[in-house]
Image 1 (cartoon, rainbow, N blue to C red):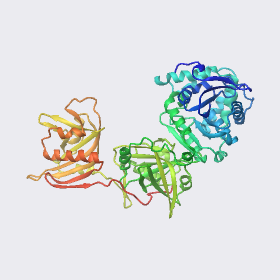
Image 2: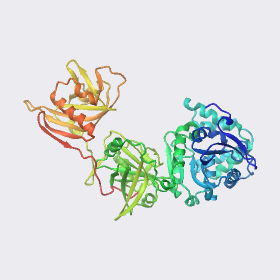
Image 3: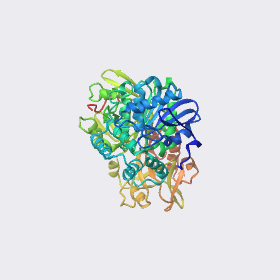
Image 4: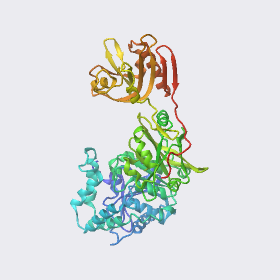
Length: 601
């Protein structure tokens, strides 16, 4: 983004104490407070996008921009008092406050010191109880500052905030940030950074008294102001909420201004009633059909339920007591035993995630059902939108705000309002009568079937089905037996020869020829990765267009007609019979388990 004179998009001003600020727009007043090394102009994208709805005031923090230096050994109160003096000068009794990084700590301090002056706060990329190694690194950087310019240190900062090397799409944002760093008063920067290095725990015992609605927002790739920190702060704040922006780093307000501003403006625009209840953004823009299909990923399955603890630590337990509750609003529930070690953590959490496990996650299920000291060392995970851990490879995940906690006998029911979800076509891990089960037809068992068994697959990707075009018409991929990649006559051998990366899922049809000699046919549903080209006779056909294809085998035509119908209804079954008559046995769409497979936590 090219620098534009502030006069083109905001009015510049100076308060009696020398504080510099920018102002634009009209409406409900909002005070923006930047981070260490920046200045009021860093908020240009937010000012330009929000000035039509809000009265925006962006302050130059002490020691930055046009404002005077802070005391030699400042406290957060000095910066909060500066903001209050500016509000008094402007005649503003009450404002919402948006702070970034160090500015987020100032926003919290302002709301804690003068709650009568603050409507809401947005705490962006705030630090909280840094881990020891991180805290030591920050203290060392602070100790090295001497009040003189440090070009090498500025370059290292840009690398931490944007990546090294900086991605091409972020070069403009990085240049704008670097320009602000180069313009800051070195002594003002040094004094403020030393405070920033030691203030990460200043509000640990005070956030419980934060009286205003607060949004704690950070990027999933921000290592220094991590999602766990924001989730921990949101947990402590009585009206706190955490939002994690996927893929974003520390300077998301500059690097992803549209996305960031949308979240800020949406939160500030909520009315007081919605603020005290559940997140109004939960479920916004949901595709109800996709949500229903994601819920359908759970058979009689196994989940790992996760959250972030009060110290920012990930916590989790294994449960199969999961079910959907409502589509509108989107609600799900899971149960945890009162005796579980994690019960106090989950019963007081603001958010949690339910991860539905796949067939390959049996080991993780066992670990999270145990009293292992560090359960998360055994799994790959990332923060979800609420900051709660989302496990890699799960069949589906539902990231939730806590809607309600209900005591029920010796368990508590956690009812969650879904804020985000994802799902895929992998096989879910089942659990029944104290044992794990696989809901699909065992491929090992099929391998032992007669070698002349016709084994095929209906492979789908994005609403298109994969066919092979021949001189006689169109065929599904099929072969003699399941086989292996090295057996050219088998299904797997055919797929390998055509360079088709396929994932076989549920069984779809099994039948025997009515004539003599009889021959068995087995067909799977599955998915595939789109080939690089359409060579080798591979054709991708829209599901709705399958009925127009020339398909010689009437049994295959009939099977595909059922497939198209069941796709439209999102309700699948398994055909069992012969080529002319049989029955479709429906698959259970969902099931409710009433016990936890392991909730020692």
